Length: 145
Image 1 (cartoon, helix red, strand yellow):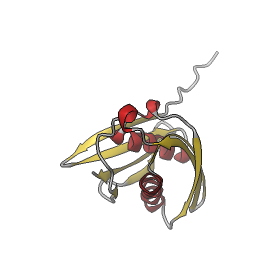
Image 2 (cartoon, rainbow, N blue to C red):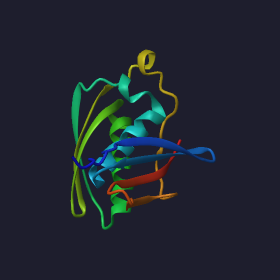
Image 3 (cartoon, rainbow, N blue to C red):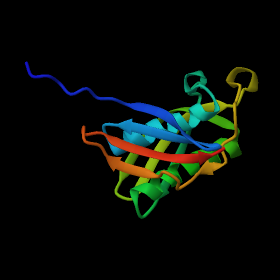
């Protein structure tokens, strides 16, 4: 039997001066965007501590994948700020220049979530959305904290 490809969905942070980078990797561009959204939440709190109580729809459109990614993260920052919520699960769909997604989360509980920082927004610093050599996608940028 031939070896099967290992599908990896990962997120991580990377250092950047006083701010922090968020990075997502997945087998599709949409999966990489979803993983980066988890990294965004992880800047604030442990994503596993966020219960998927409320679904919030997010949509954005942009002329390039890079701008679409930054707009996606900024839309999440906006939703977290205005709704006073955290999100811990994401389903993302990308069709050309349009992204539609559902983010699941709950209101911030300071005692349980212990928020570390407030994210001001995604920047164009270190902004990359690109396919990787192993049939996966990378989506990353620096967020202002």
